[in-house]
Length: 163
Image (cartoon, rainbow, N blue to C red; front, side, top):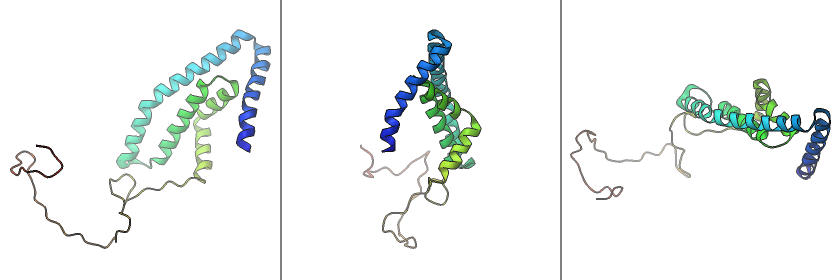
C-alpha cells in the first residue's frame, strides 16, 4: 500500500516543485538546473564504471570486505540514475547520495537489515561451496599425474576437448 501511495505522490510532488521553483527562478533557469543535473548524473555514471571495477578487484583480492565497496558503488550509481531522471526531488536525493557521510550513514542503517554471506574459508578465496548432502569429513580417493605445461607428453581424449 505504501508503494502505491509513493507511486502516486512522487510525480505530484515533482510537478509541484517544478511549478514553485519555476515561478521563483523562471522557466529557463529551472530547465537549465534540470538539464545540468542530468549532465552531472551522466558524468557520475561514466566515472563510476572504472572506479567500481577497481574497488571490486581490490576487495576480491582480499584487501578488504567487498560488501562496503559494493554498497558504496551501488549507491553512487543510484545517485547518478536519480540525477538523470527529470525532477527536482530526484535531483535532491541524487545529490545527497553523492555526499560520502550520507552514503556511510545509509549503508550503516541498511546493513542492519541485510546479511551478506560468503562461502568457503574466506570471502576473497576461490573456495568451492560444499555440495548438498556431502559429508565434510568424507575423503574421496583419486589418482593424478603431473604434466609439465611446457612439454605435455601425455595426449589423449579427456572428454573435455575435441580432436
